[in-house]
Image 1 (spheres, one colour):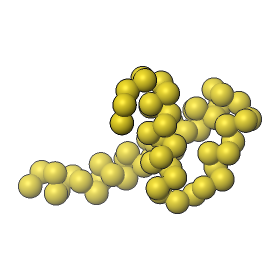
Image 2 (image 1 turned 30 degrees about the vertical axis):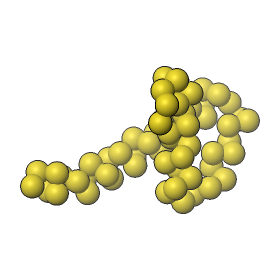
Image 3 (image 1 turned 135 degrees about the vertical axis):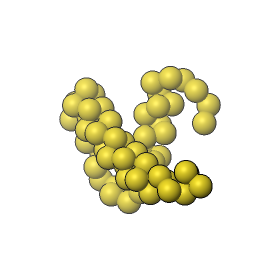
Image 4 (image 1 turned 120 degrees about the vertical axis):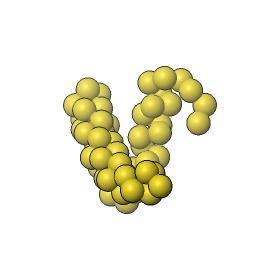
Length: 61
């Protein structure tokens, strides 16, 4: 019930936070990481975010 109530807002927040993480990651890694912005559909965005966390924390996804 609470998940159904807050789900869409959390998804929107997660998208904004994810975009912020990608921007910070590109700032951190520099220009070669600009290929991230080549794809602007959600599947590629989630793939990039998961790859980023995979690289940072070395956890199998």
